[in-house]
Amino acid sequence: GQADKLFIGEYLTLADFGLYNIAFFLASFPYLMGAMVMGRVLIPVTRQNPPGDSTANFARYRRFRLAALAVLLVMAAWLAFAGPWLIGVMYDPRYQGAAGIVVMIAAVQAPGLVILTCDQVALARGDSRRFFWLTLARGLAVACGIWVGLDLGGLWGALIGLGAANLLTYPVLVWLLRPHGAWDPLADVAAFVAGAVIFVSALWYNAEAVARLAMMQPG
Image 1 (cartoon, rainbow, N blue to C red):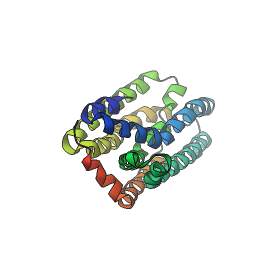
Image 2 (image 1 turned 45 degrees about the horizontal axis):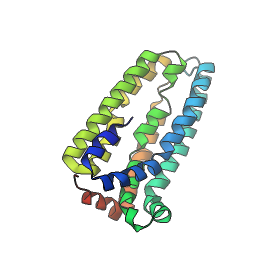
Image 3 (image 1 turned 135 degrees about the vertical axis):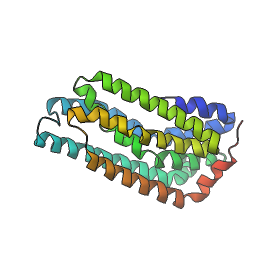
């Protein structure tokens, strides 16, 4: 969605919003690539081999999800750690303000990647109603998370709110997946733990770049 652009664009100056867009383009690459691949692969896989039909099907589905999550989390981790270096290589010093934004957006991606790698199971099984409610709940949570985050902590708070919104949507994801035998708490917990490690360690490693987010004041 574009909730982040709507709220953050109103909050930041035009120059800082330009930095945000640069950072978002780089940091969201794992999510965008995952969305493209999962849309083409997950639906055919789960349509032909419904995970709820047999233990073998569920094991195949789990292997596919774990592999996808591993690749996407590694990509997100690389961006969370190397974001400032990447901005320095690609842009001149005027754009260094985007470095901390890259770190934050990449570091909070894990809950979104958990949803991304399994939500379309419902569509594969013809359950568009539950998919609609998940999409609606997630959109509202993201909008509220960014809005509340901006109010409490500025841009830093908004980006935390973005990650928290996806995490808070998880119960709706479980509600969507359980009727189709596709809920895999083991894979989800592993991804959440990996995401927490990435978040804490990347913010520690790039503390200086992240601290500069406080300099981005309302426009």
